[in-house]
Image 1 (cartoon, rainbow, N blue to C red):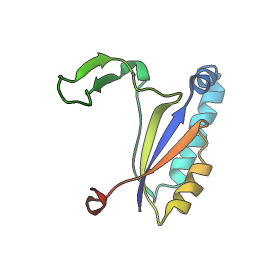
Image 2: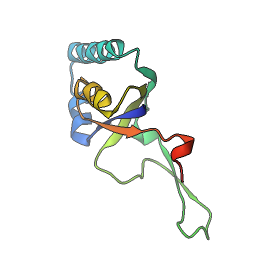
Image 3: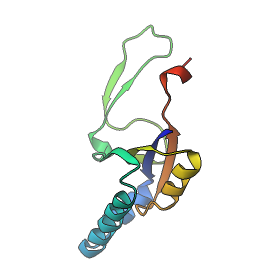
Image 4: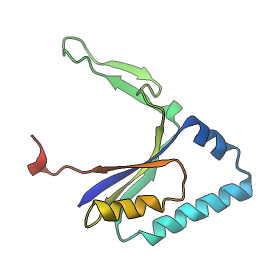
Amino acid sequence: MKYVLLFCGSDADAAAFAALSPDELRARYAQVGAWFQQHHDKIKYSDQLAHPSTATTVRHDRSGNTEPVVTDGPFIEGKEGIGGYASIEVSDLDEALRMARTWPGMGSVEIRPVMTMDQRP
């Protein structure tokens, strides 16, 4: 099954990350790199996202009567932001959960199944 792991964190998580010393930062990146290496056979693609301040948001009117509004900035409502993601292929949700439980990057990991064409309405 295909899933996407969304690596999320709150403003407090971002502040704690920004406060890391250079040595602590290198250690954290080494832990994350080791996690990706440990699971390389299941990870099909991954990337880190740029800071949310670089985002551009396109908001559509539900009625469809007006043009979409384009705004600079991360204006999706939520208490956590997505810092990166990994597309994985595993046997089932339990295996995805095992991977997510070992994520060393702190914050939270949201697991979403990738829909196949036959699952779409």
